[in-house]
Amino acid sequence: MRNPNCKFTYYPASTGLLLSAVLGLYPAFAEAGPCSADIAQFELAIRQSAGNPYAGLTAPQSIAAQDEHQPTAASVKKAQQALKARFAATMAQAKRRDARNDQAGCERALSEAKKMYLL
Image (tube, rainbow, N blue to C red; front, side, top):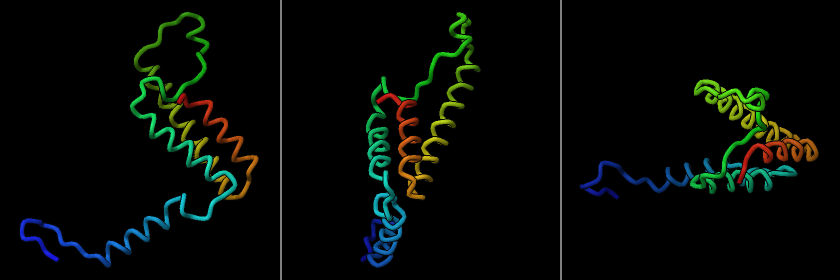
């Protein structure tokens, strides 16, 4: 099936194989752990909050801020990068524990991640 105006060729068999491979790797379709659904729901909520200016990562106020020191652009950027890294590590820990069927550990890590993200 070739369209003369199109540079690409459609191959139904290869498309089916690719789709099967992608769905096989997608966590929701893989063997689910004890809190896979909760992780997927939280990740979906994060994606859906993308346009909300009030949603995003948050952290407690620093000691320097409490002492009324003004943050610099560099210190704000460094704090944001550290928070993103901590959030990513916490979500990764929740997924690892979920894969090991460690429900309590997964729920603890996911709860910690939820405290870091305002929805």
